[in-house]
Length: 226
Image 1: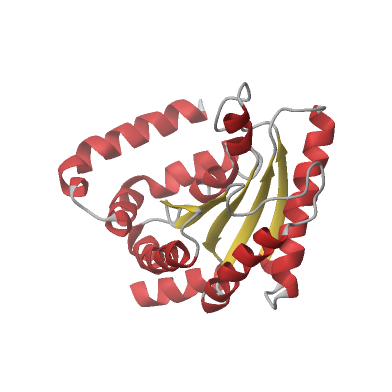
Image 2: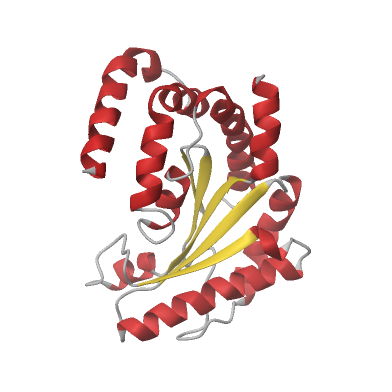
């Protein structure tokens, strides 16, 4: 039932705002769509996908605020996303709703085989993110660990958790507040490519970040909206 409601609301929203949103940037789109359907869609998505489903994207969409407040948050996220792209071009940076989905593949963050320890390359690349995260302290970040389907599913789930923990521990060691980070292990449950090829398995071995506004950023945006 909830999924049907979400589809109806989203379809109506898109029909109403198609022309006005067509040429808008990410922030403008988020504010426009959020003003009509953000509260309903955000609640539905939050109940159905949240942190345990559809990974980083699901968590971000589940927290949609919408309206003018969402637009203000979106502008800050636009700027942060650009800075992340500049610092770490090998990463995939996507603006989703009012947050940022950051994907670090094996070219960005990698681990020793069947281990959770970060390689020197991984540490060097994470160092490039530290400054950006420090410049934007009013965000919460969920770190998702993913594996390919090689090996036992339970082993992969535990490995994904340990690898996400390693990323959090390293970032915290560089002066970032540990409480900003949350860990979620996804194991092999959310492949983005085929596990039938070496290149596909490599793409599935990744770390994702869901970067979202914390309470302070939301409160500040609400005050600006007034």
